Structure formats: C-alpha cells, structure tokens
Amino acid sequence: PTDNELSGMTMNERLYVCGLMDRFDAAIRNYNRREFIDVLTQIAFTEKQASEYYESLLKNLKSR
Image (cartoon, rainbow, N blue to C red; front, top):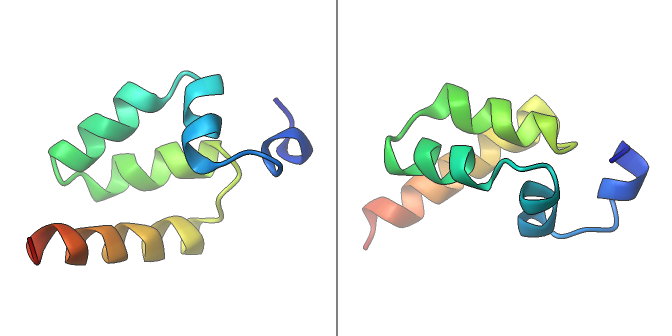
C-alpha cells in the first residue's frame, strides 16, 4: 500500500496489511528498539515518531 492508503488505517491495520505484525510483536518481546523502529518506518511512521512511540511503550511496559 502507498503512504496515502496507509494514512487512513490504524497502526494495527497497517501492520497486518503489510505482513509485519509478527516482526512488530517480536521487536516488543525482545526489547529490540532498532527492529521496532524499522518496522514502524515501513508503515509510514517517521523515525522520530517511531522512536517516541517505542520510548512511550517501553515506559508503560516497565510500569506494569
């Protein structure tokens, strides 16, 4: 899908349509920041957005 097509989708929809759900889940499970950012940039996130989302998610996971 094009960036324009992805823009109307949720993050999970983007991951599913692009076949990246397993890579995304593995990146989270393994605390692999580089892989996490790589996956998100493939679904039309900027590197900055992906990095900020990773830090936010990591903070939430550690507070559980």
